[in-house]
Image 1 (cartoon, rainbow, N blue to C red):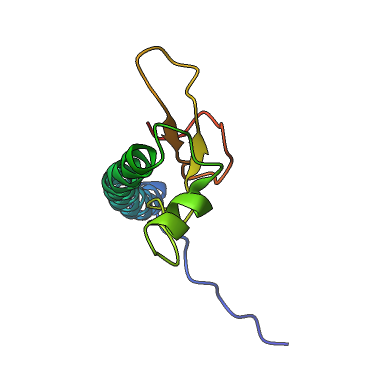
Image 2 (image 1 turned 180 degrees about the vertical axis):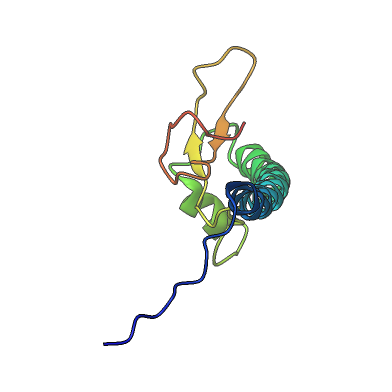
Length: 126
């Protein structure tokens, strides 16, 4: 039986250095991904605000044409302006309408469910 020699283990400082490099690469990748996600979230919120303003304007026009009455829902607004569908929020959700609004100085509210797709959630966009 012939004995084979194993290669000597790298010194602890070399192993730590390699591990440190890997950790730095992983942290850098996490940072870049996090920045990308934050930027993407900002884009989605901006798109939501723009779409929301469009829907709010359509609701205002509906109310002007119907003597100030609230539409039953946003589908009624879409039919009234001869649209198949109204704009959606930045995450692809349909907006919800609350008319009349419970908030002071607001006739109605157009609501976005936000990124979690849950209406009334903490991440809803105003």
